[in-house]
Image (cartoon, rainbow, N blue to C red):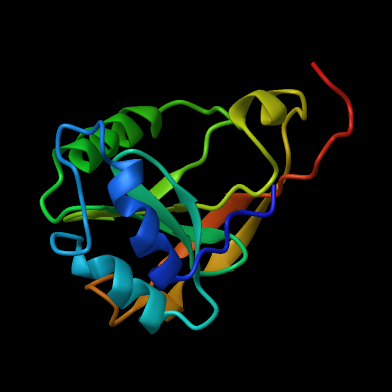
Length: 157
């Protein structure tokens, strides 16, 4: 799954459409400034995916930042609490969250399709990523992060 690769400007055109049925609709006037800051801070970052309340921005080959459309969004806090519960579960099919802060989740970027697609792949080995580049960009400290390698299996469930 290659991702959307939206630019910030292109994304801004679609935000009102994406959030029109939301309990907290967004537009360019109330859009979270963190989205633009992340895209300008991380060279090569792009908008990888969009949802009803947040955007997924790829910042490297293996890492993404999920940012709420609106500052102080309640939905991302709910997602953070779910990710916290999932930390105790050893499930190779669910993307991992590594750090959470106000309006943002640093998480594993899984590029090979949906959860349904990944469930047909079985367990994959982990590899280490040095997240030192995240220092100075919102209070993250140096961390070693262990990510799963996901390879498309080519066979359905």
